[in-house]
Every structure is written in structure tokens, then in C-alpha cells.
Image (tube, rainbow, N blue to C red; front, side, top):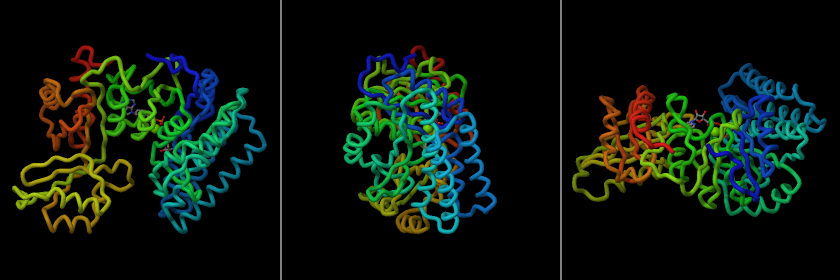
Length: 465
Ligand code: ADP
Ligand code: ASP
Ligand code: MG
């Protein structure tokens, strides 16, 4: 398996550590070793310590009782205190932590009284602000010259709280003027996931967004490589939590990895590869627990382009079928339906059509609400004026990812062989050479992935590099 320092690198490396990698002092110490052993690492992007963002999301709920709020705050504080107990913090760092915890408590109180998307993003930012303060101290305790940098000074976004869009053209000059000068003599530690809009209001990039932050900073810095350190030894043929037959890939192309991430492989945030692809920066994915095990290199071109590379699973899918007899030979029906959906700002995922129906999926993995809840009464009543609408929930999307899947011989035979008598609600094949997607009931999804994995990767010789 490749090692992150295999290539001859002179430009800076951006390293990102996820929540489990920074869960406690020991985990942070392992990350510090990784940074120190790879001297080209100039910028370190951190997630919140494991569990902290979930607690912050809890805190942002206006329905929380005062006792529940205090409990969540004290759990967050405990996570920090357990790390601090193993560190000799500088007075300044201790003050910073105390100040952050006090501010967090105030904001959670303000949200309880008057909830808003703006305050929620401010609240969610505390996880990364706490972990970056502590990880800087861990690096310093290891003799490294580390500085803490507030990413909001460079990570300019729009004002869409909860899923803010990075403003790439503005980020680059900010990074060059404010962050780049610091990396000459220091390891810069900064926050993933958070940003700020033009007026300085704190925003967030969406759950799991720290991978994306690292890639955006890598792009702006002209990095040689982006190293994503997580809790698995690379990108696997499928989520190793689904089947122990999953194997780590030594390489995967940008296109394949982007499809995998889009279709649910949580190991990378779906947008991570966009900046990397734009600037052709290789991305390494490895385990901070086991850096010696190597990991996966994601790059423009790979040595092999197997038909089947990996399988992704995304839950929380809602299928909407709209039917109209008037659609028979009538032009413009698709346009009418999609105009209504666009008017209500509903983004459609997969689409298939028949003579008189359109079936489309709504993805709600990123939302607190179900896919059904995203379909407002107004939207449904407008659709009902032009067609009949049926809604099915509790579905899961499975994506088979690889190369030339659209035109390879025997894909359908293998797929249906693996599916057996499982009922498939929708199949999308042919639109992309890199994927074939289908919907099944959520409760059978894991076993379908395992069976498909067996069919595609264990019975096939040489399908995996
Ligand atoms: P981090 O906190 O480091 O960002 P995540 O939990 O977001 O880590 O992502 C790592 C998890 O992604 C793994 O523990 C694994 O269960 C899941 N995962 C899903 N699909 C894959 C895949 N194809 N390869 C590796 N991991 C995957
Ligand atoms: N802390 C954020 C989350 O849990 C971002 C990240 O971990 O990437 O979603
Ligand atoms: Mg993640």
C-alpha cells in the first residue's frame, strides 16, 4: 500500500485529522507523531473531537430542556478536560479554552431563547475551535513550532448557514496573504468545517466538511498533497462496517472516488475531490491509528481502471413517482414537473421515466428532516394539479462504482445474479461511465451490498488493485 511520503515532495502538504483521530489525548499524540514525522506538513486541518459536533447539534435544538442543555455542555467540557489533564497548557491556551467554553454556554442559552440558523452555525463552530486550540498545544508539547490560525480569516463562504458555499476566488488571495507567510517557520493548525461570510459571520460547510476544508486550503496553497487521516486504512471496496470482506484500495481515480463520496462513502466529504481535481493535487487517505499500514492514493490517473472498483451505500432516500395520462406523447411534462421542484428549491437526485410516469429520488442524508418532510404541502399541491404523486420512504441507494460500467459486457447479469429475489425500486444505468445506481428497501440494503461485494470482488479475479 502507498505511504503518504512515498512521492518526492517539496511543496507543502496539508494534513487533515478527523474526529476519531482527535478523540482523546492518546489519539492526538498519534496525530502529532504523524505531523512531526512528515516535515513537509505545513498546514494541519482538524475536525472537532469525536462526538463533540453531535453534542453541539443537540445543543442547537430549541426544544432542549435546561437540564439537557447543561448535560450536553458538561459532556463537551469533559472531553476537553480529559485532554487537558494530560497536557501542560500555556496560561494563554487555558484562558482560550475557558473563554471558548464560556462563550459556548452563552450562545446555547441565546439559541434556546431565540433559535436561528446564524446562531446554530456559530454554536457548531466551537468543536473545531476547541480541538484546534488543544492540538496546537499537543504539537508544541512535542517540540514543534506550531501556531493556531483562525480559518475564518481565509475560508470565505456565502451566507447559506449550515451548508455554506466556499468562495474559491476569494479564498486563494486570502490564503496567500494571511496563511502562506506563517508556514515558512511554523506548522499552522487550523479548523476544518467552518468559514465566515463577507461580513464575518461564522458559517459551516455541512457535516463532515473538514475534508472539504483541507482540500480547499490545499488548492489555495498549491499543496503537493492532501493527507486525510481517519479511522480506516484507506478507501475500501465498500464500507468496512458493512462487510469484513471489504479491502483497502491502493489507488483510485478522482472520478471514481468522487462518485463513491457522492453516493455515500462517508470516508470523504462529497465535495472534497472538487478542489483536488481542479488543481490535480493527489489525495492520500490513511489511518491515524495505523499510519504504517499505508493507505489509498487518489489521483487523476490510476495504473488500472477496473470495471468494478467499489460499492457505496446511502440511506435515507425517498422515491417520488409522478404519473399523468396526459404525459403520453405530450411534450413539456418533464419541464413542468422540474419547474415546480426547482421553484420549491428541491434538489432531485436520480431520475427515471416511463411513458406516463417520472420516478425521482430525494436525498435527505444531510438534513435533520426526512425526505418526506422536504416535500412541502405547497409543493405537493402544485404537483397534484398536473399529476398523481406517490411517495415511498425507507429506501437506500446502492452505487456500483468503476470504469466503463455503462458499456461493459455482463454488468446486468452479475448485478441481478447478486440481487436474487430482492425487489429493486429504481435503476439508473447509462448516464455515467463510472456508476450504476439502484434503490432497495433500507432494511435489506446492507445484505445486498455484502452479496454484491461478494459477486463483484470475491468471485472476480483482479477486480481490485
Ligand atoms: P473522520 O471522522 O475521520 O472524518 P468519518 O467517520 O467521516 O471519519 O469517515 C470514516 C468512515 O467512513 C469509516 O469509519 C467507514 O466506516 C466509513 N466508510 C464508508 N465507506 C467507506 C469506504 N468505501 N472506505 C472506507 N471507509 C468507508
Ligand atoms: N465536526 C464536523 C462534523 O462532525 C466536521 C467534520 O468532522 O468533518 O460533521
Ligand atoms: Mg469525515
